[in-house]
Amino acid sequence: MAFFKSFVLTSSAPVIEGNGVFLRVPRMSDFEEWSALRGESREFLAPWEPVWPEDDLTRSAFRRRLRRYERDLHEESGYAFLIFRTADRTLVGGATLTNLRRGAAQAGSLGYWMGKSFAGKGYMSAGVAALVPFAHSMLRLRRIEAACLLSNAASIRLLEKMNFLREGVARQYLSIAGSWQDHLLYARLSSDPLPPKLAPKP
Image (tube, rainbow, N blue to C red):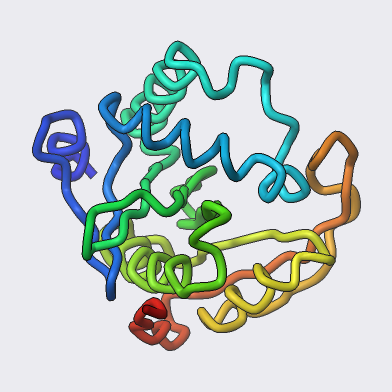
């Protein structure tokens, strides 16, 4: 992990290349585009996310977010990425690997979000398809876990397309949209087939 961290904390952070997308760590210079995309997608994202703090889209909140990401990186407990369309370097969404457990577990949790105007066009599939091999190979995670609401059909399709196996239901697993909600639990192992390299729709 020292190799990865040494690059993240410089201006030449590593880039994960996908099919039609690339992922890289967030920078302060991303604030305007990130804030605009999240802001215009608020109603679209709200049913699937924890309640946003009142100042969530402010520059100071974004700066705190970056400090938290850097702390997680130093502690090797989490990795955050923004997802960009390769053709024009437009921000389309984000993905995280969090709650990394080493020792006997070698596991972590996958999370993701997509801007409303880019949803359903294959960008998240391409992003996750690129991130999964990175997590298994470079981060040496044997197991990647993910959870989604029982009603989130798009997320269910994505995870199953990426060869995540449904393992059960966790009752009142997370507080989403202001209430504790049940979640489907998914996971894939490093020994499972790699996801296909999917291209976004034009």
